Amino acid sequence: MILMLTAVNTKFPLGFGPKDIDDRWLPVTDFLEKPVDFDVLICKVAQHLQRDFKVPAEICVLDTGTSVREILFDTILSDKKPSKIIIIDAMDCGRKPGELFSPDIDSFPKVKLDDFSLHQVPTSNLLRELRDLCGIEVIVVACQVAGTCDSVSPGFSEPVGEAVERAVEMLAREYFK
Image (cartoon, rainbow, N blue to C red; front, top):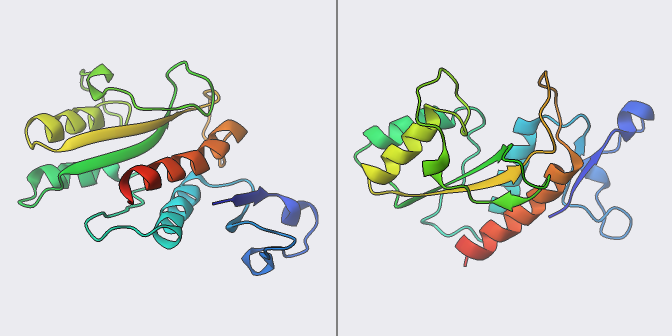
């Protein structure tokens, strides 16, 4: 999977887009205009997993955007539960930018905060409850961010963008057999 991220249409309004994808001169999977909205990127990754790989019937690929906390809470309350949940997120853990890793959910803070980020509580508490109280295997695949910023802006760093394809291929190899 190759996602082309470009600002060509903002610099030169030529109207490039998915219609221009061609195996000979533009061999990419999809085309996204910069600055890239992170939610759009997550959606594209989910779409490509479903389109480019044979997703087994027992696997559900969801683009949860910022609503993962609500989905995890609903899962705890549900009568039917999955056997495994894999969460993909970007976090700052002092590693090399773009590095993929699997943090132990027990290493996440246990204090209560009013924050809805995966790597903050209460979402990290929900992950532990899913594992400990519901018997669900919880796997977190994280990507080290290139740095933190004072304000949120669309897009992501080059190392994180390059890690997306590696994460998709890793998940497909491991779970889409």
